[in-house]
Length: 144
Image (tube, rainbow, N blue to C red):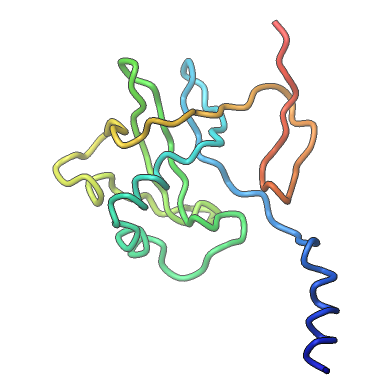
């Protein structure tokens, strides 16, 4: 009976959660860094089974604003998405740069994201709200 009461009490709070907005990836658009709400590298890690390689660069400590433990810089070059830079522990004052060659041997610089075929979400406009439930920022539309 006591377990049922505790369970009933705790289930009252299941809908209530407080989450930290996550540090997004960034993408170069016309030479300017923009937020990127898509996560192309997450798909690569899941498909390739190389997530353990990233752990070697993360060291000790983490923060709630980077549950992935990394942030990436992307660009569009020759009509293709390319991974330009990868850092571990983006919450740190000095994040650890992760060599792209750790995941793509023989490649030191930008690598084409051939594994990604999704939509790139690049928010535009002024931030009008932050939703901790979705862990994303809401941006207003930019008028031309």
